[in-house]
Image (cartoon, rainbow, N blue to C red; front, side, top):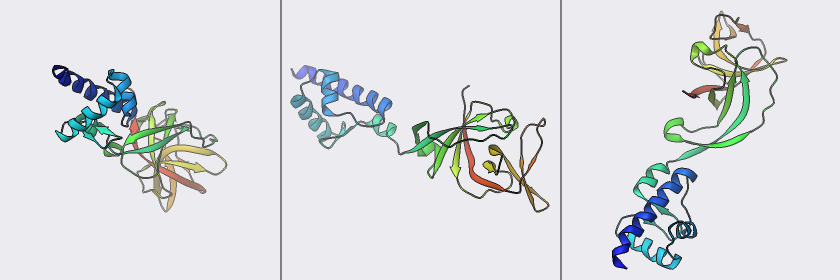
Length: 198
C-alpha cells in the first residue's frame, strides 16, 4: 500500500484547501475521512507523519496546508443592517440581516457594518443603488468624508459631510439634488469601502 500514500496525501491536502476556501475553518478528521475514504485511524497517523515532515500543520484537531494558511487570514465579522437612502431621506430601522466575514487585510479592523445603497444621489462618488457600503462606526466626521447621518425627524441618509461658514450640511454627489442643511444631525459612521458588482 506504500505506493498509494502520495495519492492519499494529495487527496487530504486538496480536501483541506477546498474546505478552507468554502468554510473559512479547518475540517475535522471525521470530515476529511468521509471525503477521502481513508479510515480515521489511518488518516490521523498519516496527518501526524505529514506534520512531522513539514507538509501540513496538524495539532491533533486542526489541520492547515500552505495554501489554507494563506486563505485562513484574519477576518472580522460584519453585519449587513439594511438599506440607506442615497436620495430623499427616509426612516430606517437598524436590523441585522446577515453576518459576513471580511478579511482584515483588505477591509481593516474596527466597529464596522454594511449597508446597501439605495438611490442615485451619490453616483458622482461612485456609489450606485445596490452597492454595499462598508461603514466604520464613529460619531465625528471631517469635511469631505462620506457619512451615514441620522437627521432628526427625517431619517438616515448617505451623503458627503461638508461645512461652510461654521454651518454643516450634507452634500449629494449628484447635481439634481440639493444640499441638506443640518441643525440636528447625528453622524453614525463614515464610508470606507464600496463593494459592487461589475
